[in-house]
Image (tube, rainbow, N blue to C red; front, side):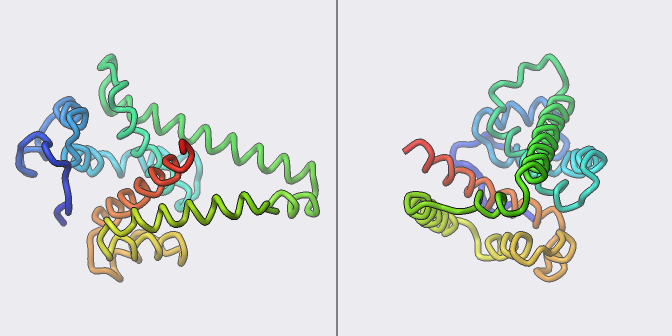
Length: 202
């Protein structure tokens, strides 16, 4: 399934050409703003990074989420790639850091719950009027950004995160490949992250 968009002014090259391009060439294309180059790198290594992450968290849903987060970090930090290691080794390093951060957060949360008890935990979720206002503003920003993705991508995101369907189930229901679904989920999530960060700097 072909990608549905690419950045204006991205380096030229057909999808077939890029499929056989070196990792280093793909990295240079991403640095120049090419979403097409990033998509090829994503498709090339998604399964390997997912297997790497899954071996550490042993939970499929967490592994899918953390793999998406890892590739989001790859896209955002591509300018920092120095070339001292292979692109794949660099991606694995990012995935390892992502997993370690996740495990630390989960461990810290578990320790807080055990220390505070159930009653205190319920209080942690109470929100102030300011919190409610900021959440409404964030949701409005997210809604605006989601209008720029295709309908099927938004529906796939809903099925994955609201109905907790697997990638394979979503692909079967929507008659699309697993890779297309993964890419669509990544695109939506990246937009939501952008919306959240945009609200944070205002």
